[in-house]
Image (cartoon, rainbow over all chains, first blue to last red):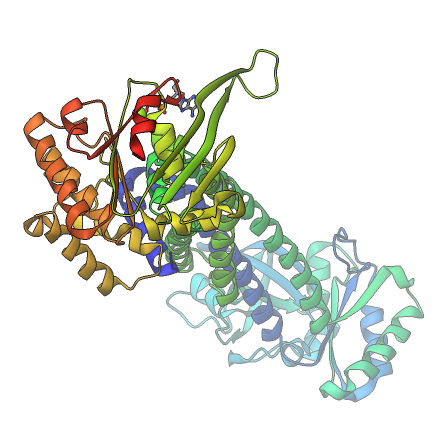
Length: 394
Length: 238
Ligand SMILES: Nc1ncnc2c1ncn2[C@@H]1O[C@H](COP(=O)(O)OP(=O)(O)O)[C@@H](O)[C@H]1O
Ligand SMILES: [Mg+2]
C-alpha cells in the first residue's frame, strides 16, 4: 500500500469518527497553539526590549549600581554627582555624560494632576539619549548647577497637565514644591508598555533636594562613535574605580544589556515552550490511547486486509499514517488558533506577539513527531495481529 | 499435476490458558490430515460444528501455519516462506469468501472489490477498471457505488465473491458462503461459484454443513474431530 492510499484510508477512518477524532486531537491542538502563542509572546517581548534599548540612541554606555548579572537583585546606588563630574572631566569633550535619578510622583498643574515618572538629569541628557525639545528649551548647565526649580515635560505629560494651554512658563507642583515649565519634548512613543512621553525631567540637583537624597541612580555616557566605545568603556571604569569598589558599579553597553535581557527572555520563552510541550505530550498520549481503541475496533478489518494480502508493514503504516494525519491536522489547527490568538494579543494588549516561522515549523514538526511517537505502538500492535484470530474477532 | 495446495499429515493445536502454565489446555483442532486440491477442482468439505473445517480452510488459505506436518502451495512448503511471502501468496493466488461477507462498511462495492489490488500496488484507474469488471462478472454492474448497508445479503456476498476474483486467483476458498443467506439466495450464490469454477477454471473449496450445497461438488470430504473420514479420503483418488 502506498502513502497516498494510506492517507486516503486514514482520512476515511478519521472522518468516520469525527467527534472522537476532534476530541482526541484537542490536546495536540492546545499544545501546538501554546507553543506558537508563547513563543510569539516571548519573541514579541524580546523585540520590544531590543527596540527600547536601541531607542536610547547609539554608542551608549550605562553605568548602573552593583554587578549587572542574570538573576542579580538590584543594589542601591553609591554614585554621587562628584562621580558624574569626574567622568565628565576625565573623559573630556569626546563624550556626553548624564547623571540620572528617578522616582514616581504625582504632578499637579492647577486642578489637574497626573502620576509621572520624575527624572532628575544633567544638562547633556537630551543629547545622550536623543531626546528632542519641541517647544521651549532643555535644562541648562546653570539650571543643574544651581538646582533651579524648572521642568521639561514629556509630550503626553504636557497634554495631560495642560490640555488647553501652552505649558511653557506655567507652573507644576511636585510634592508641594513648584517648578516652572521651560520645555516640552517631542513625542517618543511607548516601549515595553512604558509611556516615556509621560516623564517629567528636572535638574538632578533639584530632584535630589526634592527626594531628600545625594544619590545618583545611573550615569549615561555617549561615545562619539562605535569605534570609541571600547576605549571609552575602559577609561570610564578606570575613573569610577578610583572612588568605588568594582562590585559597586557596572559599565554596560547596549549590546550587553540586550544580551542579559535576551538571556532572561530566552529562558522564559524556553520554560513556556516546555510547559506547552508537556501539553503536547499529554495530547500525544490521548492519540495513542484512541489509536489503540481504533485498532481494537477494526480488528476484523485488519484480519480481512491481511487475508487479502496486506503485509505486516502495510497494516503498521496504515495506522501510523492515521496517527500522523490526526496529529498533523491537530497541529495545523493549533497553528491557526495560535497565530489568531497572537494577532488578538497584539491588538488588545501592550505586548505585540511576534509569530516566528521557526516556532510554527517546529510546532508542526513536533506534532507530526508526536504522531509518529505515539502512533508507533498501536500501529505495531495492529500489524502483528494474527489474521485468523482477527477475522474471528467479534 | 502439481496440486494448488496440499496438506500432508497436518496437525493444528491451539494452546489455551496462557501458554506454559500447568493448567494450559491444548485443543487439537486438526489431528493429522492429508489432503490435496488440484487445479480447477471443486471440493466440498462437510462436518459438524467444531470439527476443524475452518481451521483446515485457514491453512489452505495460507492464513495460518500447521503445528506439524507439511503445507505446500504449488509444491512450495510454507516452512520455507516468511509472513511477507505468505501475504503475497494470499494476494496473488488465493481468494476468500466468508460467511459474514467481511465487507468494509462506509466503503463502496467498487472500493471493496478493489481492496486486494491495493496490496499489489495497482494504480487507482486499473483498480477501478478491474473491480468494475469483477462486479460485472457477478451481475452487480448496477451497484458499483452502493455501500454494504445498502445491499441485500445475497448482493453483499456477490461483492465478496467479486473481491475474491478480482486478483484472478488459482484457488477460491469459501467458508460457509451460504450460511447467512436464505436457501434461494444461497442456491444462487452456489450457482455463481460453480459457474466461476467451471468457466474460469479456478479451484474451489467450499465448507458447508448443508448437504444440498455439498451435493453440488464432484468431490466431498467429510471431517470429524479433526480427522478426515477414511471413506471419503479413500474415494478421492479412485
Ligand atoms: N483460535 C483458536 N483458539 C482456540 N481454539 C480454537 C481456535 N480456533 C478454533 N479453535 C477450536 O478448534 C476446533 C475446530 O474449530 P473450527 O476449525 O473453527 O471448527 P468448524 O469450522 O468446523 O466449526 C474447535 O474446538 C474450536 O473451538
Ligand atoms: Mg467454521
